Image (cartoon, rainbow, N blue to C red; front, side, top):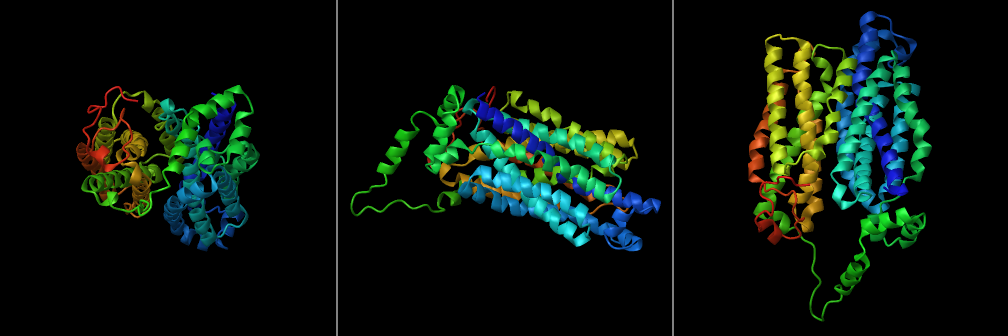
Length: 464
C-alpha cells in the first residue's frame, strides 16, 4: 500500500471507531438518568437537565425521543451527504462533519437542556450519515479494484470495536456531564490528525484538478503507481473521446437524460426488492441495537457483546459465495435467530441465552447490510444507478426511523409485535432474493440491454 492509501485507511478507521460512541449515546443517556432517578441521588449535572429533581424524573421518558431524532437526522443525512460530497468533494464534507460531530458530543455537557439535546441528536444523525457516506466512498476510491470488498468490512470492524469500548467509558461516567465528555473528548483530541486525509483521486480527475493529482504523485514512486493504478492509464484517452462525442452533426440533437430506464419493469422489480430488503434489514438491525438492553442483562455488558458479535464481519470477504446466495443465507439465519430468541423469551428461558440468539440475528443482518451495499450497485445499469441506489438508501433510513416507533412491552422488553417484525421481515426477504440475478464476478451493467442478458456467473461460486 502506498503512503497515501495508508493515510486514508488508518485515519478513516479512527473516525469510524469514534463514530460509534455517539451513535448509541441514547442507550447510555437513558440508563444514566434512570439510574439516578431510581436511587434518588440525582447529581447537580442531572438536575440541571430540567431544573429540578422532580422535573428530571418526569421527563425521563422524553429522552427516548432522542433515538427518533437521531434517526430523522440519519434520514436527512442520506439526502444531503451524497450531493454535497459530489459537488464539494469527499474530503471537505468529511472534515466538516467530523468537527461538527465532535462538537455535538460536547454541547449537551455544557448546556444540558432537554429540547436542545433532542435537536443536537438530530444534527448528530446528519453528521454520522455524512461521515459514513464520505468515508466509505473515500476508502473504496483509494482501493484497487481487486480489493474493493475489504473497505466496508474493515471500517465496519472498526465501528464494532468502538461499540465495545463505548460502553466501558459510559460505565465509568455515572453522570450526565461526565458521560458526554467521556464520549466526545477523544474525538476532539484527534481532530488535527484528519486534516491530512487526501481527496479522492477519481473526484479530482472528474473535476479536472490535475495539479492536485500531480502533487499526490510527486510524493514518491509508490504514490505515483497507486494513482496511476486507481485512475487507469487510458483515462485521458477516454476523456478525449468523450469530449469529441459531444460534437454532433448538424440537425442531430444531443441525447438527454430521462427517467425512461427507471420505468422499465426489470429495473422497477429490482428497485422494489432492494428497497424492501434495505428497509427490513435496517428495521431488524437498529431495532435490536437500540433495544439490546431489554433482554434482562446490564445495558453496558449487552452493548459490549453487541459490538463483539459484529467483529466477525471482517471475514465476510473471505466467504466464496455469490451476492444472492450470501444474502439469502444471512437473511434466513437472522430471521430464524430472532424467532428463536422470541420463543425462548416467551417461555422465560435464561436471559443470556435469549440475548445470544438475538446477537446472532444482529450479526447476520449486519452481514446482509454489507452485502446489499455492493449488490445494489451491481444490479442497476449505469444510466440510472445513482438514482436507484439513492432510493434504496432512502428506504434503509426509513427502516431506521420506523424501528424507533415500534412499541415496547410495559416491562421495558422488546414487544411481541416488534420481535415478530424483526424475524418475519428477513425471512420474507430471503424468498424475494430468488427473483434477483446473481451479479458477483460479472461486469457492471451499462444499459437495459445488459440487464436482459443471462448472468455470466449464475451460481456466483468462488466470486470476488
